[in-house]
Amino acid sequence: MEFKGIIGSFLAVGLLFTGCSTMQNSNSVKQASGSQNIAQLIELPSNKYSETVAHIKDAITNGKTDICTIDRDGAAEGRKQSLATVPTKKGYDRDEYPMAMCVRRVLV
Image (cartoon, rainbow, N blue to C red; front, side, top):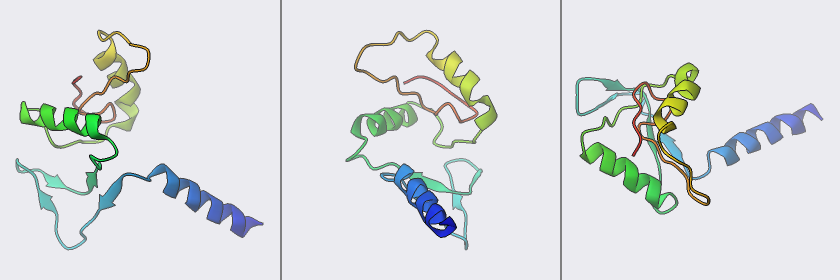
């Protein structure tokens, strides 16, 4: 019974990450446009998330950072601040980049 629970947990985690892939290179660290080191690269497939990827590319092209320094503790407050002035529309999502869990946040 415990074995089935463990397998079920792995399956659930795997399903959560369906559509996103991570790439890690233990031999080297990718250099970003600045002098910062990247520990992990996350790829978001544009064929599945076309509008979100387009918004991210547009934000980066217009000078926003391509680096996300994770700040999970500040994510809720960051989301609240970045989306405060943007009204909701039924059937639409509000994309933000960098994401709420990143140290720097801005709405796109």
